[in-house]
Every structure is written in structure tokens, then in C-alpha cells.
Length: 215
Image (cartoon, rainbow, N blue to C red; front, side, top):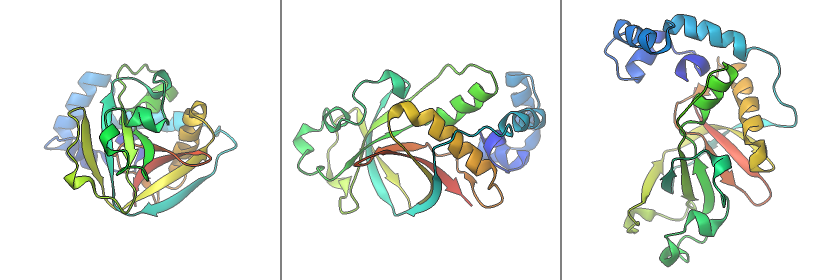
């Protein structure tokens, strides 16, 4: 994902991925993908620069203040999960906290979706998918004192910049994602993906895809 969607050099990516240096990362990458990191990046650049972004989407850059999410992990892609966006489903084991959390927004975090899109555009298959479902807390709430059921975890979100794209229904998620990727590839001199999981929030009249950024 970092090779495809960021301008970071290979030594920087090696450190981000936990390797001590460029050489050890390159050897491991070559064994796994049968490409050097440099050739993999060049191959993906050809794919990504096909000028076919989906129409009907608008992407903006937005800064949000620090908040919290309460999430539970499911090992399914979002299109295979029934009930997404329904607050009672997202908080299915949080019934005792519904009054406290009534101003929260339903949310999913998608740690694998960018890798999935990279592989799809590169005609590769991707075999792992995780979807974290839960609640995005209101800016007046603080969940530190809430005892969560064992399946849920508390996630702090620092103040962050996002690429935000609105769409009408979950069926439009991958179109919105492709549009956002193309938008960011044309602005890599200013913004690129941070590597943190993208999120989808259920707003009053639309859904909003957020991809965390660094400048």
C-alpha cells in the first residue's frame, strides 16, 4: 500500500514496515512477491495512472479533532455483513450504554480495503478481510470510564487530516474509494495516505468515506 499510494522512498517504507534497512526489506519483498519493491512500484504506477476515475463523487480534505471509537472486529468484507449502519447492530452488546452513547455515529473501520483495491487494480486476488464495526463518539463524550464487553475495544483517534468522499449507499463504497485514490495520486506533492485504516461514517443523509492522510 505504501509503495503504491505514497511518495515515501523504499528505505523509509522499510523502516515503517519494521525492517532495519532497505536491503532486508527488499530481499523479503522479492521472496514474497517475485518483484523488487522498485519494480512493484513501477508496475502499479502504470495501472493507477489509467485516467478512469468514477464520476459522481467529490473529494475534499478536512481536518477533524481528536475523538474515540468503540469497535468490534469481524473477519468479513463489508458487503457480506448485514445490518451495517443500524445503530442497534453496531452496539449489539452495548445496550446498557445506549443512553450514554445516543449521540454517537455508526462507523466501520476498514484496515484491508486499500490493499484490496491495489490488488484488484493489479489483477491480483486478496484473501484476507477485516471490518471493524462500532460507534464514533460525539465530541462531548469520553469513553475512558466505560467498561466495554470483551469483544469491543476503545480506539483513540488523534486530530487528523482526511480525504473525505460522500456517497449514497454501501454499494458505492468501492467507486468512492477508487475516486479518492485517483484524487490523492494527483496531489502527492501535498497529501498522501498515512496507512491508518479508512473509515465509513453513516451521516444523516449519506455515507462518508474518510482516508487518513499525512502531508
